[in-house]
Length: 441
Image 1 (cartoon, rainbow, N blue to C red):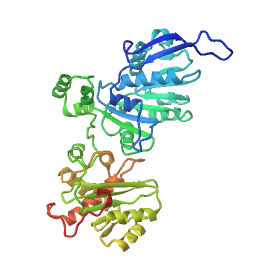
Image 2 (image 1 turned 135 degrees about the vertical axis):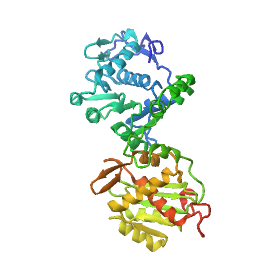
Image 3 (image 1 turned 90 degrees about the vertical axis):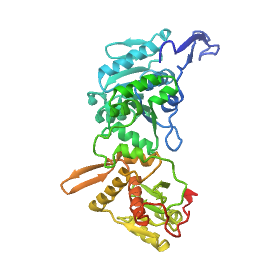
């Protein structure tokens, strides 16, 4: 937000104040600086996967795409419109010198006639309504605890310590306040990347947005010649992170991020030849994924926290006569048994550390050979986040703690079954396969 972009004017209010005093009431006419559509959606009106207003918005964005300017505008508006004495609004950057950059930009943006009080030492701005906007560094996370905050921006979040995120979260608890976490992509092994993937996968109350350099070019914020020069001058992985918001595969992902991207495509409208089902445990999701004869995903269904009889009835309808491999581990065993009474085409798969390793290595082979095609969204988000860790007893494959891998498991099961029914790698569907699954029409 710039001083030129933000305009305001003083005028007397003709309404009457309590007690009958009709004078000395000031209205402020304010025109928000111009923001392009993706900025406005991500910062001012974020929505989660269910279409509801999101409390937290995670924004992976290109450098110089306007994320900082948009969030300065958002935080200032929150403080001006909702502020009162005792209310605090925070801008948090990885280190104190970075917080100064946003502090200087907001100072220039706030109209002079508002008569705000500036504290250059503490990096704070006190508004006439008594609200205070603070600019803080996150290099000492313990210093962030204790305060109640009514709106917060976490800047350069991918470069911020995870302990700082925990501290920021705690300051928003009592107030139930909103936050915007923004930054360039910086590898996969950081809390911002993981939280962005969870929001992208449909975590309730959280929104995810990606703003690339090409979005900024389309909005006339950047020029294509600048982007083309950056592409020429910078190493590919640096350009992808800074301008395309695409993470570097910094180890730990068994599939390879570049191979995951190479397998992205539209949902197939052909009938299924193989289905994989991962059954929910506790707060996980039940996921069913279907592949067509060419290895393209032609259906994805996922649901959460419903009675087992509802899940069983739904799966019976979805599976139809399509060959299916379903998780029969633990609570999945009786469910699969009931499915098999109605559908003889259902086979169970019991997970052990060894069987999961073999299953995931098979999926990795398929993805790296680009034999699979799947749509962008929750499945791709889970694949990006999936990781492996070498242990003394072998390799452990899973999502990071606190995140889901149900879609990955369902895809791996579907691919295992696909290899059985399509031994020649596609082209001719097994006899009798029809389009029977409701979710693909």
